[in-house]
Image 1: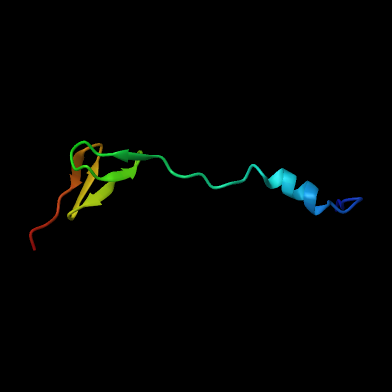
Image 2: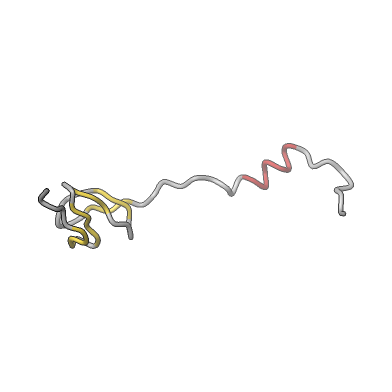
Length: 62
């Protein structure tokens, strides 16, 4: 099994990890409901599920 010949310093390790960072998700505003949501995601408003401004799942009248 392979083993490193030298210990990797904390600085070198952290330099490599600088590219792994969380990004803020892009948000869109629905033209139909005015709700703010993530792009390419369905979202709930008043019991109805919307996607691309259209009702996908309608609330039941129970």
